[in-house]
Amino acid sequence: MKDFSNVEFVCERIEDANLPDNYFDSVFIHFVLHDIEEKNRQEIINSLAGKLKKNGLIYIREPTKHDHGMSPVEIVEHMKKAGLSELSGRHGEYFRWPHYTGVFRK
Image 1: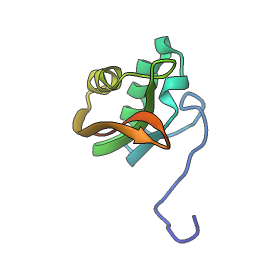
Image 2: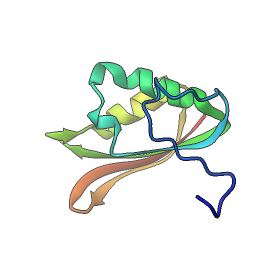
Image 3: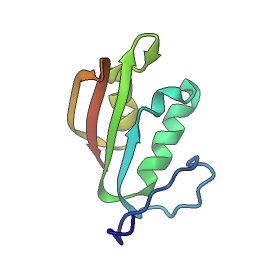
Image 4: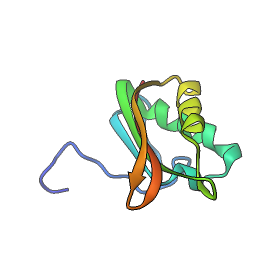
């Protein structure tokens, strides 16, 4: 983004990205986590949390449909296991899709 010198977009698998720990202020997850195999989700969240600076934030929005999504309880549990605390969370509709939107702090 040419207008912001302190914004960096990374579109890569977290396992393959060579990103420093304790570096980022924020991480955004938008309709991605539910597509990761259940057995790998916690590892991914742990990796993302490790990239955050102290007091860094993870913003997440995930679909919550039974046939395509995750439950809000599962999302919150993953975040808490990664050492993050929930600042806000709500369940609602997004373009006719039920979803969970939350903010978590390291």
